[in-house]
View (tube, rainbow, N blue to C red):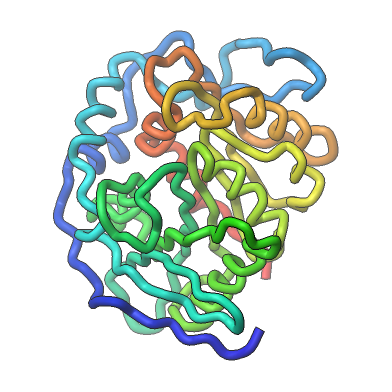
Length: 288
């Protein structure tokens, strides 16, 4: 594609502090029973045997704190700038958060796919992508965060989004070896598809509450942490995430897998307040 212009609709916004989210990310959680991290079983089996596993996400006693974190999420307009990317034959809306920049430093880029309204161009309403932008989270892992539009009805929609990501890597001080994709609900399959369309761009993927098993053979060696669950935010919690994880494990090292079904809380709320996800995600780096 030819030269493209990144057109800001407004200036970068200053993020206000929302302590409950940051407190959970830093503190972790309490002792747990019932919800465990586990390795994926064969996709042909009905389920995965539940057993204790290293790194199990502590859930018991954390649900109230998760609800407090959700209530404290800021409006997207307080965190992100609404922008438009001009391609050769289309325009994509997206939201962008920029960290505090230092000269000569490059930063990771988190590509976040939301599984519900509002759309990425509206910059209105609460956004779980904001957990990556909290001051305490940025103090540990400063990064850019982009929430792109995935244009419906376009056969090349994932190629277009990857072109946007490539442009951001050129226009901003992004570390090209630390580009990550995550999303929840209907955004979970988007994570799989965007990486399958260009696995050489991404250092890691974390689909939450949904996935696309049909992409398992196309994502290369990109590391994955897959989250399953039910309730709102688990839009494709019909076994798709489990099948995707199982198929990945057939031809490459097994991905990390966490099952939040039965936790009493939608999977995205649990995953995005799990500090282990942040530690793992930002610990991944693609060989240049």
